[in-house]
Length: 287
Image (cartoon, rainbow, N blue to C red; front, side, top):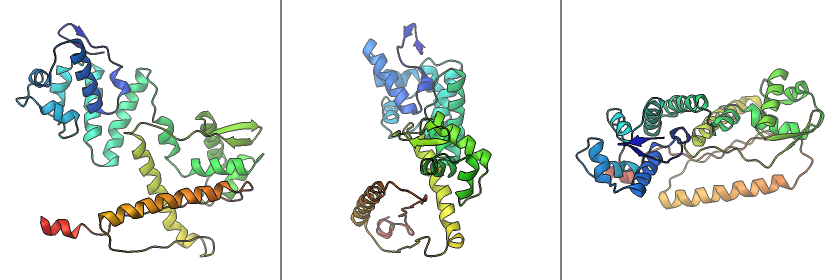
């Protein structure tokens, strides 16, 4: 826990954070609660001339840099691994590419494990790391008593019996499946959960993998086994938002249809994809 000029800051450990702005905000609020502390003083201690700079950072209107993050860490009284963790948080928060974010998130998770803090994104990342987990989770419930080799045999993508066995062990350990008797499973009601910073990266990873499988399905299956359609259209922002709401409602109706059937025989994947093929032409004219 941070100290500053003999003042003890009663906060949860830094390795329970993944958002550096949230950590800085909590630090500021705790200092303000226990002393006459201001954004001006915080900025001055960190060596910034602008009295509102750190306030803007915490509000998401500005960002720390590789040059300034060390000064802020020192101003908050961080030492040792806390400084390294804070700098990883800053670079994670500032990164634009998922591949870069992943590097720093993994650094943070490693430090959290080393210091005995539960890594809340670990199960989510593993679940979304491969098509195997959601598919095997569905098949395990459909095939009571089936051996791992039998489950592997009905998967359209190549997977070994050993991989299925390990997947079942993970799904049970993480609480996504419950074994009721030998080789017989039921799904729990547990959703895949993680932090608001880490979970979107994991989900985007799954979208990429499922998108690749969708492309493969064009050659792998006949047209009576798969439905792949598309529409290229012109829209404005209002139209886009209406379409997104319609897709959300459609997805919910599809979930309701699936819940009507108890005798399930196959696992399907539905990708709903709406993405731009051009930039905003009006915005370009105004620029």
